[in-house]
Length: 185
Image (cartoon, rainbow, N blue to C red; front, side, top):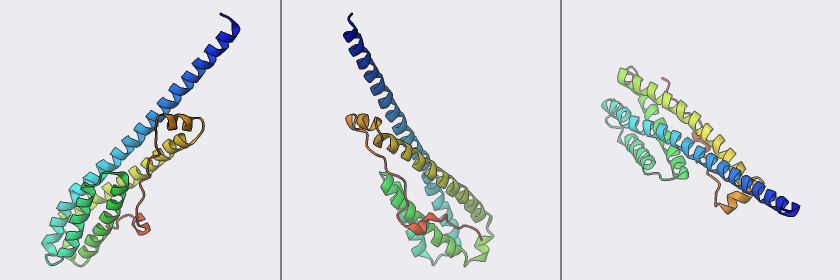
């Protein structure tokens, strides 16, 4: 083999290794984003599953407060029908607003605040809310790393070639919803 052939072959091999490495990095980061979204989805589902129990306990004490219960159930159904990160973020905002109403409503019923079922649900909900906040932060951190890889040279070249698109951050639609649900009595 002559030196020119060796150099061309070495360059081709190096470019092939860079392509494989960049592609694998993008796939790994995309999979992490999907995994982190799954973690958020699990916590949101746990909360959605807890809500009917919470509503039933509160209903027993506040039978005439149907509008607040209706909003909670509608928010839950909106979440269960969400098919994208953006739709889930919107439903998250609705859910937090509706839950705030339920807990504000519970303030008017001292015997409810002392009910052990309500206190247990309240504790479980607080735990889930903490996990959702952590999962949301971790998801957004993972999305930022992935989006950086999609945008930065040289991986952006391969992202364009292999059709890797930026992922959406999980952002609340209303700034007021950034506060955790207050569930302390």
